[in-house]
Image 1 (cartoon, one colour):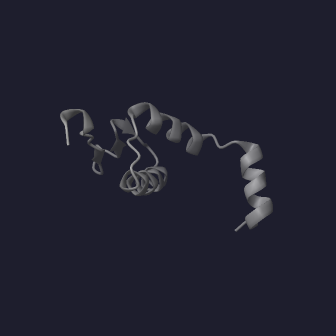
Image 2: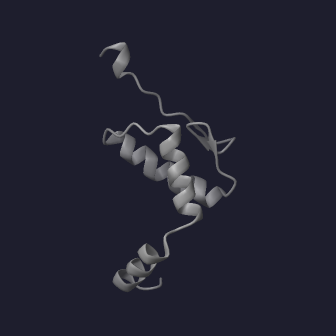
Length: 76
């Protein structure tokens, strides 16, 4: 492993931050943390920009995607 291959996922449960991005909503933080940690195990190396994008998407979901989800899986 070279120095260029190093990557550190920065998660701070006390401050509710991932890669330095703070989440005010504890549920959103836990959901994103779970997904990010799982994807990092699969090889993803999220940046601060990636986490900001996820935060935006969880805070302001796309209505078309939400409607499609509910058509497929119901309202529960």
